[in-house]
Amino acid sequence: MIEIRRILCPTDLSDVSRCAFDHATALARHYGSEIRVVHVVEPFRAISGGGLPYPSWTTLNPEARERLEAALCAMTEPAASSGLHVEEEILEGVAVHEILTEARSLPADMLVMGTHGRGGFERFLLGSVTEKVMRHAPCPVFTVPPPAGEPPPGGTPAYDRILCPLDFSAASDHALRYALSLAQEAGSELVVLHVLEWPVEGPPAVLPSWFDRGEHQRRLDEDARQRLREAVPEDAQAWCRVEQVVAQGKAWREIVRLANERRSELVVMGVRGRSAADLALFGSTAQHVVRAAGCPVMVVHTD
Image 1 (cartoon, rainbow, N blue to C red):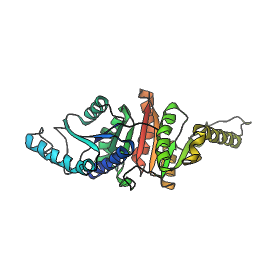
Image 2: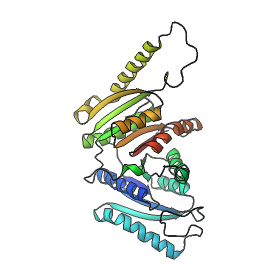
Image 3: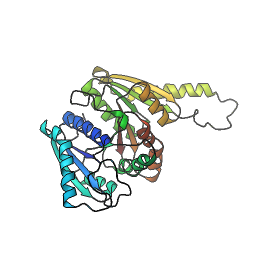
């Protein structure tokens, strides 16, 4: 089982980030973790909103800090009263920088963040904060979108239906460890998915006359199913229900489609490193899944 000792939960005190905190507390109860809740004040925000208790055009004064402290305490008090170790901290600076610095200094074993991601200015905010944090975070990032709602009842993250896309990289193998850990505790249904993007998404314009496209596609499908079976430990079926699925199409679209179709409560996916090429791939897959998914998405890095 994986070990999560310290959870960092950035909040802007919006309803979405409050929901993310609820998921963080569920994870903390499950893993016996401590939670650090941080609110970052950016002194010269372009637009105010979300009911933030300080003016967006000034630096934080003592009275505003006191109001923020009271708001954070009100949000975290039920979790603290239930026995969880919860700390609150107010930081001033650029949100992405402060969150990443805090994650490294703890060090955090997981970041739990809400996403807005519905479009317009909220889409801009998602790109400028949550997505940048995900790209550079030193630990897995658990994102909670507005449609996700409260965590499963019972006080622990009993996600009964988990989807784990695999591309057979070290990153997706790492993500599978997290998916299996959560599935083991809850006896969940775990779907492992591999998406074949070729030849559905843009095959070569000219193929040799002898090339049997249907047969080639069948072999790719069989090979992917076999690799999915081999990726999951043999004893996993003893404590969770595992299904292997191979789909064809654009990876992120198929991940979101299957998550919706199976009513998944959590998607766990890996992303490779943080090089320029890796981040370009991140943008085309994990980024789109986080934006479009109706359930929480756990993004797991590997270097």
